[in-house]
Length: 506
Ligand code: IMP
View 1 (cartoon, rainbow, N blue to C red):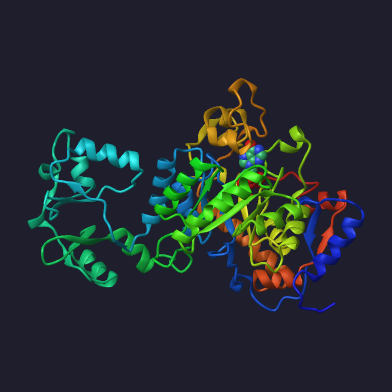
View 2: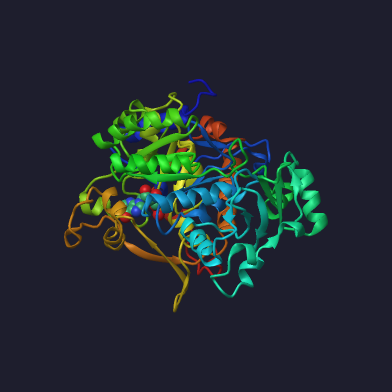
């Protein structure tokens, strides 16, 4: 056996396991340690979610209505990962969420959202809410298209009558700080910090608006951890969005791509079926219209299914049928494969085809992440780990067990009753609401505060894993990795045991 061949050792491990007919999951295995000659904090953790969507860290947030909307997607991309906006929204709402992510970091806003001088403040606020804008700076244009002023948060805050027109509430052009088209980000930053202004409209000789800089974005770009951000070639945060199958979903897909979505994820509980094949075929035209955008498909758990998705044209494959913390598919339908075996088999089936594989569901501990990557995943998707954080949709509740947040399966009765998209994920789109069969539960998870802190802990664990194996990158991990299969006693020994844990922060 060649020493440096990727997966050589894990192939041997799984060949043995397969002989016994066993299927394994995260708690069943741990990585063998090996000689290390570098510091894990220097290891590279870059990877890919799909053919054209790279990751600076291999973590992806689940397309669930209690996990990923714009705020989570922004946090994930700023951490180097990716968020997949859930689809239990109208196409317009989902596209607005995508736009919110794409605009978040705008170094220069190329096409600022403008308002007309005779629009009322009430109408502007309404439009802003409906479109999901999380900013309050709007250049005000005359009917001939020239900039006549600027509305900022202050103007909205001090406006008591919603019928006031923009032209009455705005800061007029004569009092604005502006700069000519072509001003660089660095120059804009100098102007805004010197003048203590938050917004810098760029104008041409005929006083038409050609762009706009926002101080907070510039500051983030100048001093933030921008090399970590997962950004596209225009320096906009990357984002994905879930879709279903069928003609109406093609319309949704185009709206999402138009909004700037980097990757569409065909999100089905069972991805190995004809409508997914047809959807992948139908999306080919849109992929030509929007080059560089990807389509990931899932979920599957068997190698033949992964291979079919690859042949049908998926740019990435999502693996996981039954491992989710809120999932009851295996109980209800009697199907599914424990996640480690599923990920390994699916990854092996498409090895060498250049199609990244995402291990979706079942991650409860940071130590599960290096395991998933070692056996062939390029990224892991998480719901449970992220649902209790500040950026997951919904507020925390105070209970007698402390602060909690709601985390629910998209196949829970509650989610399916509320959303066609949730029912469609489980092929119950047209099922009457009193006849739905749940494949998930509604739960609460402890409130965990800052999502960035949680992600830091997960990445800390991944780096520690790389260090113990002696790998400097994910590809090196895949070359060096070997696994131990744990006995029941070995599993018990892997967690704190025989003690009363007093520090329950882990
Ligand atoms: P977790 O990280 O273990 O909580 O798993 C999250 C994953 O579970 C999601 O990304 C989905 O693939 C999957 N999932 C979401 N809702 C349901 C459900 O109701 N039933 C089964 N699986 C679900």
